[in-house]
Length: 435
Image (cartoon, rainbow, N blue to C red; front, side, top):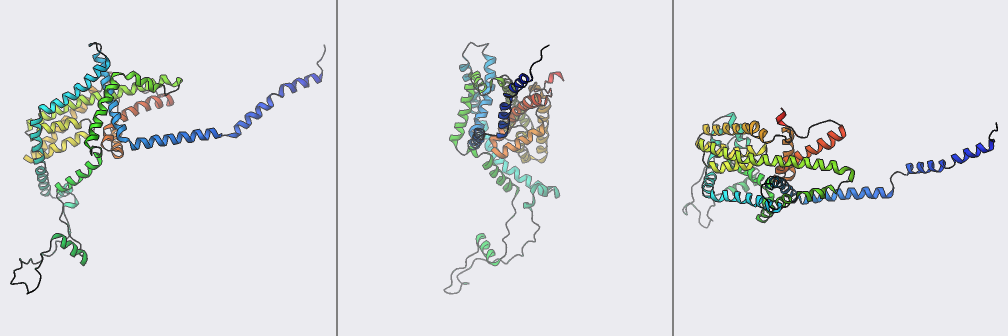
């Protein structure tokens, strides 16, 4: 057998090893380079763009939150169009406009028809509510320690009362020396100035419960309802919500397809599933809240009429409107009703408290579970925290949008993180029929 010359083997080995050496060297150099200039510029541009977007959202927070409400109502209108269109042969745009304008017209018609009753009882509410607060204050003063807790520290003072000073009567010309100026009786402001000069602190009279409540309400109104400072802004916000509801209800696929184009092709299918689940959750929540508002408003009005509470109709309307704000709304709606019960007697106020508690319990355990079948299960503690944070940062509009934003966030976290990252087979919607 002939053997291959050693020189030939050495040449082949050299030929095989020679191309690999530059490749490994190039890979080593690329690993050592790290971030290139283009990568740094791209990251800086992304951070700057995110900062500008956040600044824009913060500056125009009222517009964004109002637009979110318009999208929320638009999803409900889209569901209504899907239900009506198989039964009525008409374009989607026409059906969406009829649903939105018909609903707005029905609300306006209700207030027009019941306007005289609402005006009369609202005037009675404005007249009787301060009287009710005074009666609560008097009742609290008669209850000793319990009254001190209700009235607060500002309602009582432990400092000793100043010694009574002799009060001189009005000066007559006979008492005044010749050529002297008439003596001026000191007023409260003059006493305060005199006290400041002598170093004696002026003693302010204690505030009543009504004064403290009105003071707190004034500060709360300025904080929460700052966006209501202009009638034009309120009208523009309502128009924006109505227009967005019509457009989204008329053609939701256009906006869905536009959002899908923002995602890379491999991610579009999953993004579409997440957005569909979020729209279902928001639509279910909104429909549930609207039905609950109607039911709670009617039931509260009937119960207050049975109990003989003054201004039962406007109090029922307040209860129905504030039902849109979960957890906090029912509490706020109960306070004026309880105060109006105190106008007659503490026993009637107690009856109003029991009635409102019973209404809320029936809503929480009967009405909402029946309406919210296959809906998103939101933990109550998380709901309260979300409402507190949104109200603290964005005010009343943030409070309105807190729960639907929380529902959308919970759906996204369950699908994108718990299912896709953690791998836990968690259910996005809770099916109450299977319990």
